[in-house]
Image 1: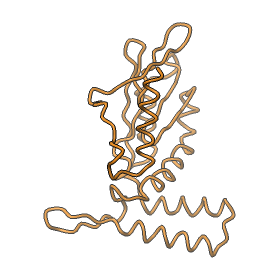
Image 2: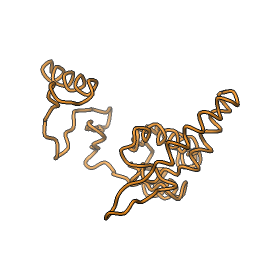
Image 3: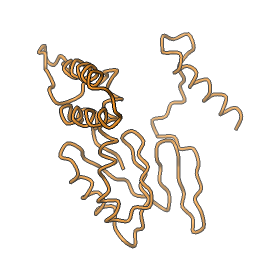
Image 4: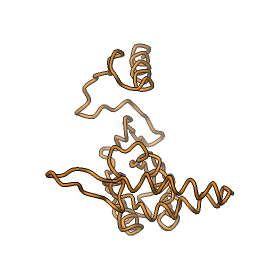
Length: 193
């Protein structure tokens, strides 16, 4: 499953409430809560962009490309994951494995269908819409893994999307160093296999 356009649909005001509840639950002092929430407000109010020579302000959305985007989106998406107990129980979902905006879902097709699950998930929150891809010929591609289900077990292999170019980041580029190390690890892993 995939969440459609999650970052531009993360509700900033609702996420602030979720974040406030987390801070209280983690026993953060009231003064620290106030300081953290002020920082949150500053970050989320700077949601503007240029479109056709106009400056557009987004009041209840996250700005694409903002450094804080990932963390704020993760707070809200984890909150949504924790509120999904109704679909999980109703459909007897065996395993629910979210990774950012992609979800690997394992369920018993004798008890429910992907469409029934999808309908319930899409009813969870008005801003989030889920799409689903079902396995074909007992195979499903999820992220960079191809998962093949047999009658007795599951086999996995590396999956490359049709747009995969095998291009790496040159070490002399101006990218952050951790991106370059990831590229080097990728090359060495391929050489070892």
